[in-house]
Length: 255
Image 1 (cartoon, rainbow, N blue to C red):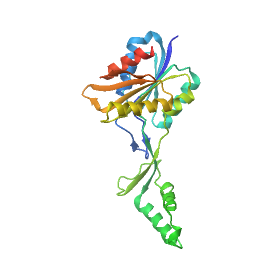
Image 2 (spheres, rainbow, N blue to C red; image 1 turned 90 degrees about the horizontal axis):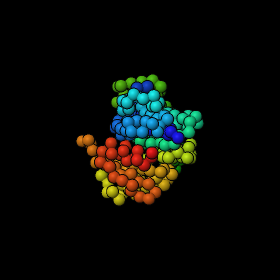
Image 3 (cartoon, rainbow, N blue to C red; image 1 turned 45 degrees about the vertical axis):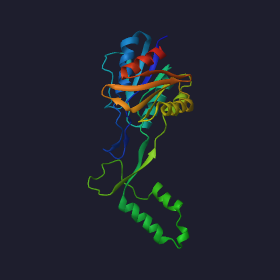
């Protein structure tokens, strides 16, 4: 039976206004190498690879009718794309290598307007006791006057502020959408011991019912190198030193 595979790759982009975005440094290079390696070595065993990424991410350059490109922008776009694919196709493997942003913009406001609202609240209070931390926090959570984020905010605002909010955790929803899919997740830390990286990655695996976690250390990525260890419920399966080695290792484990 040929396999249907999803590969998520690259960053997500969260809009602040019509032109400004919050993103991260991911390029999608690792997901790209995994997809190309699978196409080079296992094309006969693949039905379809759904390659989900942003417009500017690296994408497989191997011409193949087995690849369907799905372009997304935000975290919610990615979740919606996964739901649609899972609803229409039996997926065997998902390699969730996308560097989903942790935060998105909740609103953007001029500092002067936020200060004015806080000051007015204080001035209108009859007693000092009427001003609580909860009252002030509620203003920060939902100020009355925010910038219109559907258009371009002026480039000349000297005190522009953006309130951040957490994005949904995509990996936590995957097994809820497709309980039988083989899930490969990824975890990136920087400059930690192998023991700490393993502990964090293994907790991620358990929490999200992942089958494998590729644990990376940012301090060991660069100059053609990409060290990682792949772990499952039995511990560390293998260690790799390049993106190609990671792709080959996943290929061996999944096919």
